[in-house]
Image 1 (cartoon, rainbow, N blue to C red):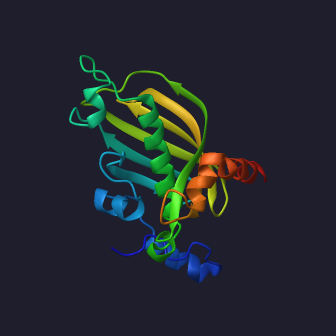
Image 2: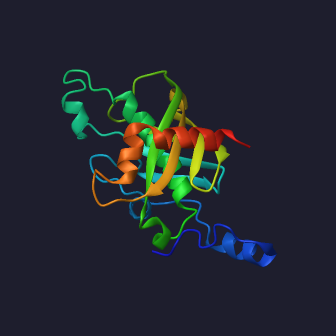
Image 3: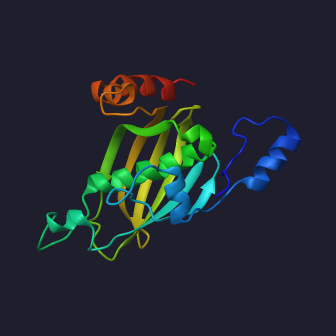
Length: 198
């Protein structure tokens, strides 16, 4: 697979024209898996149907009764946990942010979820539903983003939230700096300050 956007910081009309030629506006599951590190059972987007670079992404999640969380949430009335809907929004936003980097640049980076604001759950999401997840960038910095997400089913709002993500160095284990920073809140604090500054 070729890199999605080879020139994240291109200058000049020639470079901009070249970048437009390689920009992707859709992603299939293989391309998503080349960008996001998540795997079953935690990869929560199946297809990207629209990408507007640094502005907006629209992804689809097909909800299946075979997903493991439905065995306990709830056995007689399966509902997709709301936190997984918000996670799907964050993954879509992460995919948008990560398309700005080459495969080599993504190899030693990890996208982490650093904050959620104003999450609202409007209707249950159940097996057989298809979530349409639209994420719009509110504030973009080179390694952090604040985004507004909306998830709908058949045109009806199921969930909305504002999410923050940061790109941090990948470490070899859970004791590394990225995991420790996320755990103690220092990534979140620095991201909040970064995305709120103009």
